[in-house]
Length: 246
Image (cartoon, rainbow, N blue to C red; front, side, top):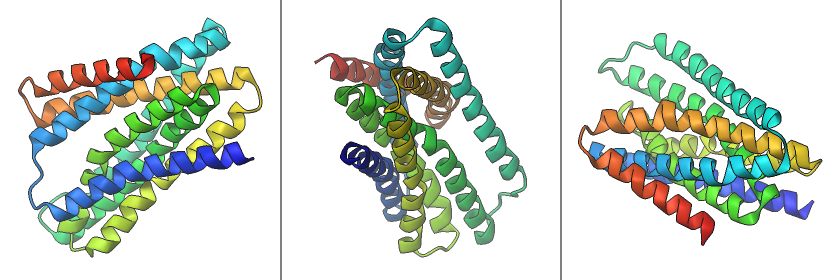
């Protein structure tokens, strides 16, 4: 029970730290550099790719067979696609213009979308700690880093929509709570059997692969067209590789 509580609290901390820091940046700074955001996104994508390639999938293969791992990866990808479709449908109903009300509505929808997609990230942290402490912390740090620009993306429209800065930080913080919930379930089901840990790890790998290829890399390249996103991706990949093998 103590281990379960510790894992949940760690997931909650790292899940809320990144988004809250991003929220504070979004509230304090009047202009957020696209170059900086692009670098953070690409760095996070490199870190997550390294974790998927060198830790999550190999660890799952050691525990279980190819079929189980493949099913977990596919399910993780499909769930993230489903979450994206839901959020996109919500966005279609919002007419983005210069009105404060529209900006506020956009910020709230972004927060809902982030809360949904933070759950599988928490699941990755929880099941990661069940496999090894090193993997758990590596996942938690990578996810916290990639949550920073997400917190900014929530805070900016809310702030420009006229919401009180304290309320903005509160809602940003709230969106990260689902990471702690995911960590709880990841540790809970991971403690039942080794096979479930393998499924959780491969599921998390699939979810993270989609986040990297479907969100982080495209967004970083959109924000900044130079070589910086590629450099950030490489640096993140190398740092992730070193952190897992030192």
